[in-house]
Length: 113
Image 1 (spheres, rainbow, N blue to C red):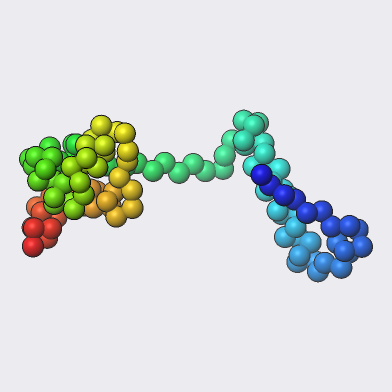
Image 2 (cartoon, rainbow, N blue to C red):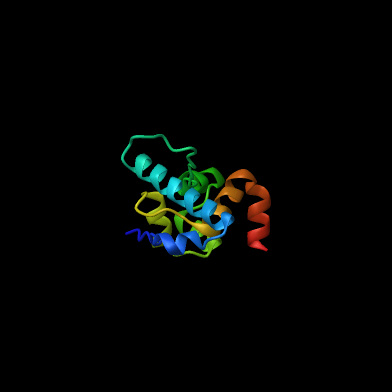
């Protein structure tokens, strides 16, 4: 829910030129967002976040689910959820999977201590 405050004319007249410009930009942004949400305008940019495929990474380095889960310090159940795409790794876990996929020898050497 978006709450838009519209100033009475007397209060808006008291705004500085900078504040008025910012207010007008905000109104324009809201109008653009509304058009994008309705499919009437394309988004100016799209960001696609890809999560690593945990099963492919695990198979790439040849570890069992149990060994790989222990290496990543997650439960086997968590790893299984990632591998079956019921959940996606996020944050540090996703970053660690990317590192293991990109440089498995270095990652394994470092993680095993």
